[in-house]
Each structure stands twice: as structure tokens, then as C-alpha cells.
Image (cartoon, rainbow, N blue to C red):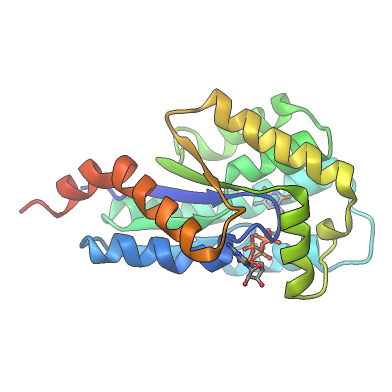
Length: 214
Ligand code: Z5A
């Protein structure tokens, strides 16, 4: 049976990396094999493009940023995600196409149409089965980002940019309520983890039963 693609999204520093092990453990405890990966990245080429995108001092114009995100995604989808899903492995991906809609479509104000065109070109019918969108106030995500490490190129943008990104994510969730589930990421780690697990039970319970049925 084909695996499922689960993505985790949200603005920077909201807590995605912290909760990934909780999601992975939940799925493996229910008997499925899980491949954890990330975007931009997930392949040798993708990691090189990630480095270009995040760790450069040179200006990258918004169209180039969007195209590089999708170049990395094309490689990732064809070489890693689709083969894993076809072999029955569940893929847990830290960011995916919704980030392009939110950051480049919303934050950079490129609009949704160009992102949709690339999504169709690069991914065809491939879509996330479930997207967990961690949402927190700007104050919360900023405070958490500061705790963490040096800022990358995109993280140096200002409050207005990140408010547009957050609103674009929430708009995506309103447009795709069956797939994108918003998790309140403001509370402490334990509370967020409990919310995530109960969402996983609701959204994936049936899929997991089918996946491990003899
Ligand atoms: N990007 C894009 O523009 N377009 C695209 O299509 C794609 C990506 C795919 C790289 O993403 C950048 O690429 C990103 C969007 C862009 N840039 N920005 N901005 P990334 O995922 O690698 O970068 P990130 O969003 O900054 O992720 P991160 O650095 O891993 O942050 P996080 O995973 O959301 O947060 P965290 O590291 O788990 O937590 C941050 C701190 O808060 C840490 O000290 C934790 O211990 C703490 N924390 C976490 N949860 C809690 C709770 N609940 N309470 C208290 N403290 C907490």
C-alpha cells in the first residue's frame, strides 16, 4: 500500500523542528515506516540550493527565490518522496509547497497564480495527505527564533513580511480545511505535542489501520 505524505508548516521559530520527533514517534509506534526529510533540501542538490537560498549575502530576487525553491522540490519529489511513498513508506516533510504559497506568494507578494503554475508543473498530482500548520503569534515565534541561533537570509525580514506569511498560511488552511489542520503553537511544548497527537489520531487513524492491516 502507498505511503502517506505528512507535512509540517508554520512561520520560522514556531516550533516545527521541536515537534517533528513527536510526530515521527507517533507514526512509528503505530507500525509504519517513516522517512523524515525537509525543504528546501532532502537531496544533495536540494541541500546545496538550501545553502544558496539561506546562507548568502547576495540579493536573490523574489522570482529567483521561488524558482530555486521549486528546483530543489523537483529533485526531492522525484528522487526521494515519490519512491518512498511508492514503497509504502510514510514521508514526514519539514515544510513543503504551502511554504512557497506563504513565503513567496504571500511574504514576497508574488501572488498565488505563479506558485500554482509551478506546483502543477513540478508536482503534477503529488500533494500532501495531511499538513499540520503550527500557528503562533509573531511575539511568540520571534522570541523562540531569538533563543535559537543566528538568523538566515529570509529570517532577517521584518514584522510586516512575517505577518503576510502567517496570514497566507492561515488563508491556505481556510481554503483547504480537509488537508491543513491548524495547531495552536503558543502554549508550552507538552500542550502542543498533545494537540498534535490528537490531530494525528483524528486525521490518520483510519490510514494507519489500513496500512498495518495483514
Ligand atoms: N522557505 C520558503 O521561503 N519557501 C519554501 O518553499 C520553503 C522554505 C520550503 C528554511 O526553513 C527557510 O526557507 C524558512 C522558510 C523558507 N525561512 N524562514 N524564515 P526552516 O524550516 O529550515 O527554518 P525555520 O522555519 O526557521 O525552522 P527552524 O529554524 O527549524 O524553526 P522551527 O523548527 O519552527 O522552531 P524550533 O527550532 O523547533 O524552535 C525554536 C526555539 O523555540 C527552540 O529553542 C525551541 O526549543 C523553542 N520551542 C519550540 N517549541 C516551543 C514551545 N512550545 N514552547 C516554548 N519554546 C519552544
